[in-house]
Image (tube, rainbow, N blue to C red; front, side, top):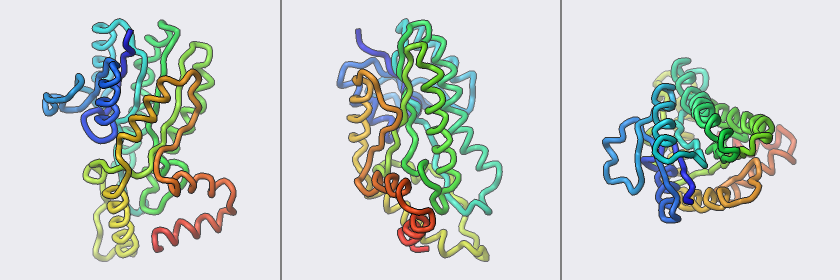
Length: 267
């Protein structure tokens, strides 16, 4: 029987690419969007779901189980970018980002676990970020939200072993998607002490996304993970130097690694 897959944020970017790839491989795919009526031409089903609203999460998960009788794979892909000097980002925007990138995935996981326990099988894939392995200047809130999800997964993996439910992280680097357009950008304030370094860093970040890797690489990786007998806890997908930056953080003294990042961002 074909595996049933739920992808949050499946209407665009990485989620859409993964959904289309898995559909071609004969999976039964359900994506989600806050506004599914805008995606009537999708190659797979799009359900209404807002990761900030528990009632929509439960409704979508229950609809899949009622229709298919099972749910084999959850891909927690919905996420939001955020940039700015931490001092100048409103607290409400920091909380909103964590609601989407951290608490949202937790609530979707909680919604699917009863069915996966009942089946005695299941796989949950959390899409994090290479940025979650390090505190990046003017992306500190994003780094923190994705890093928190990485650590949560490590704990979850051990708690779920007895139910034959697996969980893993996939941390992408920069991919050519529309994430930059959907980010919250703290405004460039004329009299801010951060205006030049933040403005320069913002241009560099957008350039990285525009020249990023093809999202199909993420789709191929996730397909391999779904077919793996015993998925690892962490996967990194992206350009060599992006992945190698994680290795460097492990082996270099803190001050040297910090200097490398500051040179990269021209700070």
